[in-house]
Image 1 (cartoon, rainbow, N blue to C red):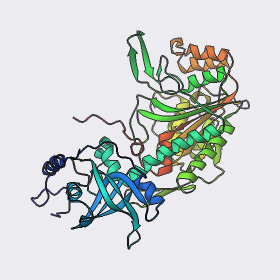
Image 2: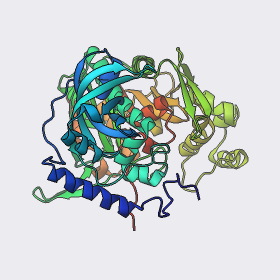
Image 3: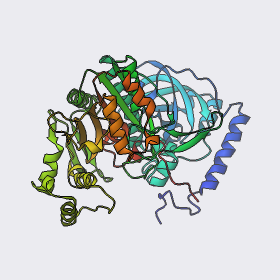
Image 4: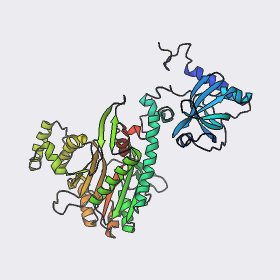
Length: 495
């Protein structure tokens, strides 16, 4: 058995419980030295990453971070400290520290947090380094870090104990740092265009704005059932009625549906609405914004996707202009030019021939949509704005003036999935009521009467967009699953 294997539990390699016991003894020894092993205020001059990025020699610094590596050379020691943003090397010597400080240092392990003071220098190999003159233990970790070479490879551990993943897998840390930076930049981008950020209710009495199964709850004080929102759309449109002309919300939605590599029950969504605009102008904005994010955070418009061994499996090309194609033409391209001349029975037969699974209860437009999803969407990796879909699919968008069977919308497909829908928003209250009634099968109790009433006060013509932020981050970072871009994905409870 290889003794370097972290799973090895021979006498030469202590078990986890033995390692914890050793660390607890060190914890007590720190206390005996008069050192609080859980620290307090420690002012710093730099973060590890900032110091390394803007490194200057002979600079007096005070830095704090987690110890991620130790190279023991007897009376001389090299260590690496860092946090989510990066790390820096430090050097200390027994002869240059007091006996008390040296004793304290010898009680430190990988995974502990420490504060270091000293002067910066370059090693002979040119590595930016802190020459330590003073140190202070800040937190003693009782459990050892994951193996420094392999990190956390077990996906179950990665998702259930994300902190272990972040402290040992630089790639994961980079994804979540980029996610935060990208969301901040989206806010800046929209703010620079004059959009105003708002917050709308997450608890709603009517789950509207999308066709999805909601999470249901009950408010005791009000004595009424409520649902977690599936989309903020209907409240944002109320704000257009109220006089907002450029508005957006970037927040969580909740859908009580399946979990997959592309779906999580709670997810982050951007929705934005612009009065006096339409779906074409909104598509232009989305194209510009996504390209802006790629150039700022991904080094360009060619996004590499790799497998777990680091081999490139796909390159997504975001070069402009992005393709725009009508829904019907894309369907014809995979199912035949006569698809829209066939009846439902012929469509079902054609699906069997094409290998597209459909259910007995599907309506004809749903069969067409299934063909689109399986034969077009899942095979489209470079950006494509799919326009003018069947009007039954989106009851909140305007019908096209030239063709009453389709609506003025786009669905942006990248990386084999929908990233963003955009509409020319329906603002005719009478037509909106009819579309709601058709969608609900005539059940008036399922119609959001308050929203229709708002439209009767007059909503300006507008364009609107949604962007699935989690899917966008997946595409831009090359992540294989939504769980790799959500810090704490929903998982089944362990038995």
